[in-house]
Image (cartoon, rainbow, N blue to C red):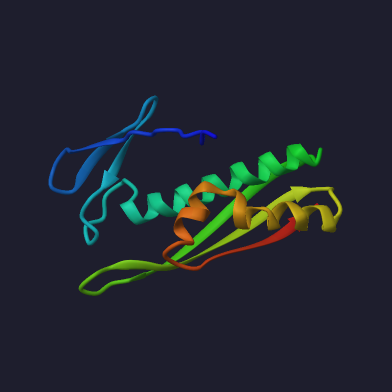
Length: 139
């Protein structure tokens, strides 16, 4: 029995003392690499939270399609609590989804509940910290 795997590669190169450039297969972004210095680029922790939000939206889209539910829009608001100490760490994350749909509440609840086990980034982060997902429906 074989397990399907995907491989991802990102290369990050220092541009100057405040910024780096991250490149993937078909994208490129600047990354702020000095936490105390404000630059017009996301910090690595913000990218981590962005990955969580993006993966959560992918999960909603996948489950909604499987349930034949039309989701007109999704907004994922993510808050992470970072401990700043000798060994900084993100201690927890909270994802709040705003779902724009006419689907019945019970169906929406089922879709959101699958995110507890069906999201790659959520599954990875849950190994080291609590990740809470809440939602509200707007019609």
